[in-house]
Every structure is written in structure tokens, then in C-alpha cells.
Length: 231
Ligand SMILES: C[S@@+](CC[C@H](N)C(=O)[O-])C[C@H]1O[C@@H](n2cnc3c(N)ncnc32)[C@H](O)[C@@H]1O
Image 1: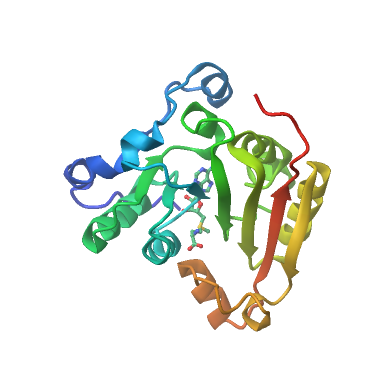
Image 2: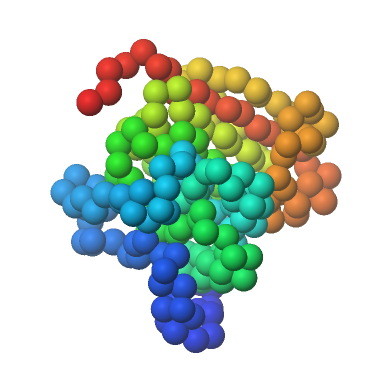
């Protein structure tokens, strides 16, 4: 079902322009865009400091990142979200909270490399990415080999991907993909809320819904190995 456009979407997006670093696609074909277009972000100019930068892919209404950014003001955060309706909510919430360390990209994650400088990100958060169980949509899963290649390029050596999901099948699929892509796996839990990692955990909007239904939450940290040479 298609989501109805938010009321006054465009003027509201315009009011958030200072927070929005990119919107849409540079051309129709995502593969061509990823290969040929570069609008690399200058973090010092954007944030006015050289603090470490972390990225959430598929950030939805921004509940996770807003709490994270308020808690860790010595870091900068980027939120990537495909859906304009939901990123608008996240940006309006960020403005209301007066946070200066969060910026947004309203683009498909498939073209992240057009904007994010290589090896510039310390951590990537994948919170409750849609599992897309249909075989035909495997490539669109945010932990498919295609996306891990992109994350690998963006992450610093030793950089991490933190993933949470309610889907056991998607979790198992993702663990296999991380291992195939050469990431080391740590902090694996099949019941996050009853694990040693629960205390630090920030509960996202989707997580609250799933856990209210009694579903366990799966979590893993995949670490990029520090043994390759970076240019
Ligand atoms: C299930 S929601 C989870 C939202 C939020 N992370 C949470 O935990 O509450 C998944 C989000 O990922 C976004 N998304 C899915 N595929 C994407 C892609 N290729 N690029 C950017 N965002 C994407 C969707 O628009 C949606 O808002």
C-alpha cells in the first residue's frame, strides 16, 4: 500500500533544508549513479568539527538516532532514509530537539557511495531493516552482498555494523553474508532485552512494537577486519 503524502510536504521539507544534505537520485539508474556521480560530503564544513561520524541506514522516524545523538554529543550522525514522509518527521523532531550533530540524506542506500567519503564512517546501524523474505527481493535486503560491499567501502578499518532485527530468518541470512564478506562477528544475542547489552540499548519504534508482541530481538556486531590496505 502506498503511503499518502504528508500535508504541506514540500514547504515542511524546505523548512528543514539546513539538516538535509541530499534528496533523490542523480539519475534514474541506481547502478549508473553509484558508479558515476560523486558529491562527497565535507564533514568539517557540515558539522563545524572533526568528531567521528556514524551512519544509520533506514532510519525511519529517527527515534533511535535522536536518542543516540543526544546521548553522544561528541559524535556526528548521518541518517539515510528512502521515504520522504518519514525522514520529514525525523528532521522535524531533530529541529525541535535542537540537536546540531545530526544530518539527513533522503536517498536510497544503493547510492551512498555518491555522498559518503570512502573509509570515513566508524559505525553503521541497521535497525529493523525490512527482511524482504521473497527470493526475488534478495538483492534489496540491506545486508545482501551488494550492500555489504558498499558498507565495506564506507567503513574505516575496524569499523562496525550493528544490526538488530526481530526476524530469525533474516538474522541467520545476515550472519552468513557478513562472514562471506570477511567481517568478524561479535556480541551475538538471540534475546537482546535479556542480554548484557540490554542496558545500553536504545529501543527503536519498530523494536518497541515487536517486543510488545513478545518477540525476541536479535542483535549482532559485525566488525570490518583491519588487515586490508586503504587508499
Ligand atoms: C522497518 S523500517 C525501520 C525503521 C527504524 N529503523 C526503526 O527501527 O524503527 C525500515 C526503514 O528502512 C527504509 N529503507 C528500506 N530500504 C531502504 C533503502 N534501500 N535505502 C534507504 N532506506 C531504506 C524504509 O523506508 C523504512 O523507513
